[in-house]
Length: 389
Image (cartoon, rainbow, N blue to C red; front, side, top):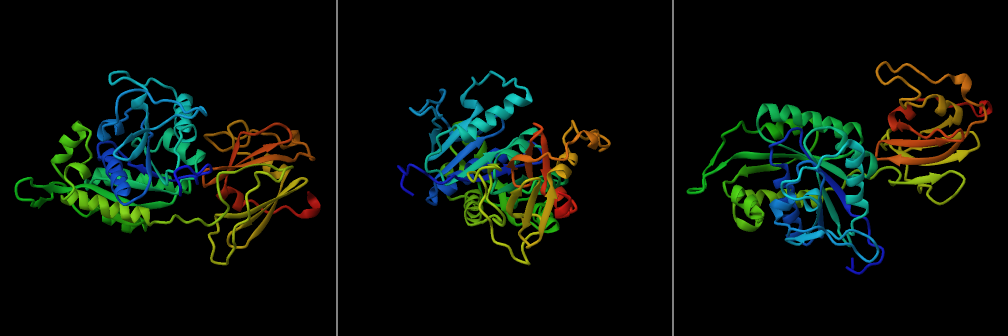
C-alpha cells in the first residue's frame, strides 16, 4: 500500500492481554511490534493501559504532547519505526490519570478513531491486566482480529490467564494464542537457561483450552536496562534467545488469520436506508452457528441468516420485550421489569449496529436504544410466525 493512499485499509487490531499485572505484557507488546517492523510490516501500538502507561518508556518515545494534523487528527509518536499513542504522552511522569469510567472510554475510542494511523497494517492494543471495563469497551467498540494472552509459568498467573481467555471467548474475540513470558532465566555469562519458575504451564493451558501456543520468552537480564533506556530488547540484544523468541511469535501473529466468517464489522445501519447495511457473507453447512451471514428488515420484523445456513425471523415487538438492558431486566435476578402491555403492537426497528464481534445493538420506534443483544441470545429466540407479525 502506498504511504499516500487517501483511503488506507483499516489496520488489523490485535489485543495483547494478561489476567494479572507483572507478567511483562507491555515488554512483550513492544518487542513484538519491533519484530514485525523488522519483517517489513507497518505497525502501531495503542497503550490502552490508561492508568499505568509504560509503552513510551519501553520504546523511548520522545517527551511532549502529540501534534495535530491539518484535518484535526492526532499525530502518533514514532519510535523504532512504530507509531505510538499513549496516555503517558498526555501527562507528566508524576501526574496520575484520575479518570472515571466514561472518560477512560472516551480516551480509548479517541486513541483508535482520532489518531492518524496512516498506512498502519497491524495495530497492537496493549491492554491493562484483568477483565474489566477497558477490555470490555475495546471488545464492544472495535472489531478485534484477535487477542494474545501473556502469562508467566507460575500456577497463580496461569489460573488468572485462564479467566482472561474465557472473557475474550465470551465476547467473541478470536484467541490467537498464549505466550509464556519469563520462561526460565538466561545466564548473562554462559547463556545457560535455568527454570526459576515452573515450566510448560503456558503450553499446557493452551492445549487445555484448544488455542495456539505461540512460544516461550526467557527472562533476559538485559530487559531491565533496555526498559530504563528506552531501547527494546530486540534492538539491544538482537542475537539473544529472547529476541529469537519474539521474532518467532511475531511471525506467527503476522501470518495468523482470525476467523473472518460472518458479516464484516463494525457497521451501523438505519434500516430505512441502504447505506450502512452489512454486505451478506457466505453460508455453509459447516459454518459457525453463532456468526451472522446476513440481516434483512421488513416492517415489524428482522430476518437473520446465520453462517450455517439457518434463517430466523424475529418480530420487532418480541425483540423489544426481550431487551436485556438494566431498564428492562433486573441485572441481579434477570427478572423482567418491562411490562409487555406497554409495548405497542406496531413497534418497529429503526437502527441496528454491531457491538464488537459478539452482539447487536438495536433502536426502536419508541425511542429505546440501550439493549445489547448477544448473538447467542438472538440465536436462542424462537422464530416469529410471519402471519403473527
